[in-house]
Length: 353
Image 1 (cartoon, rainbow, N blue to C red):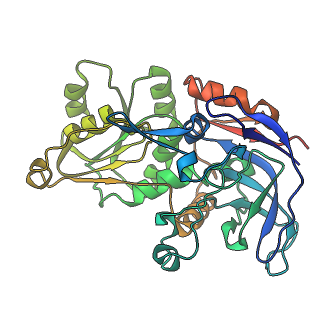
Image 2 (cartoon, rainbow, N blue to C red; image 1 turned 135 degrees about the horizontal axis):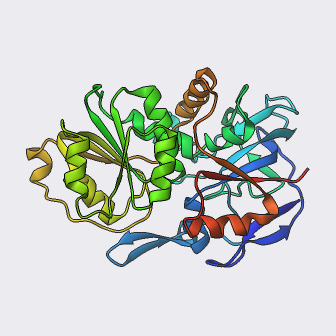
C-alpha cells in the first residue's frame, strides 16, 4: 500500500510504499476513501507544540517515530477483519480516531479521551493519509447513514471538537451572547452546531475579513474583526447584556487573554485551539468575577455518535462549511495552503479509485 508520510520533521510528506497489514484478533482494516486535512496536522508535521515561555513538547518525545502517517478524519469501507471482529466486510464507516490505551483508569471508565497514553490514529498511530488504516476494534467504526461521506469524515475532528466544546457551556438564554473566536474550519462548524443547540446570539471574531464573511454566510448573527482598535467597544454594542460564553478555536496567549477580558461576570471561556503560547491570569479575578476557564480536547466516542445522529436529523444534512475535495496525491499542496491561511472551509484528501 502507499502512504504519505512525515519522513523528516518540518519537511513535505513523502510517498512511502509498504506491505498492506493484515488484521488479527479484534482488529479491522479500513480501506480509506477520504481523509480530512486538519490544522493540527501542521503542528505534527513540524514536530512540536508551542507550550509558551520558550517551551515546546516534541512529538518524538511522546513516541511518534518517523516515518509517520498523519490523517485523523477518516471515512472508508471495512476491507478485512481479524478472527474476533464482529463487523462485516464492506461496511461503510467513519472512524473515531481518539483511542486510548484501553487499560488505564480513565479508559476503563469510559473516559478514553483523557487517557495519558493515547493512541489516536494520525497523531500517535498511523492514520488516514494512506490506502488503508488499521483500527483496533469495530466499536470505533460508526455508521454515518445518509450523510455525505466527505462531510462525515469532518465529524471525526472539526465537527466533534466543536460539538464537545459547545456541550461544555452552561445553559444560554436567547438574550445571551456566545462568542466564537476563529472562523476557520472549527469555528465554521461551531456556528451551525451552536444554532442547533442554543438560541443565544452567535458572534464570530477573527482577524481575516474574508473568513468573517464566510462566517456570516454560515449563519453567524454578527462578526467582529479583532484587529480593530475599537473591537471591545464594538463587542459591547453587539452584546449589550454581556458575553456569557466564549469558545476560543485559536488558543494563542493573545486570544485567551482577550477572551478573559471580554467574558462577562459569571461567564465561561472554553479554550480549544492549539496555536500555543502562554498567559498570565489573575487568580483573584477568577473567583471574584465568577469566571470559568477550561480546555476542551476533541470529544468522546459517545459524543461523536450523538453528533452523527444530530446531523442526520438536521435539515440540510450538513454544516454550512465548504468542503474542498483534493486528490490524496496533492496532500502537500493542501497542507501548504492551510498553513498560509488560504483555505475557507475544510480540505478533504480523496484517494483516487
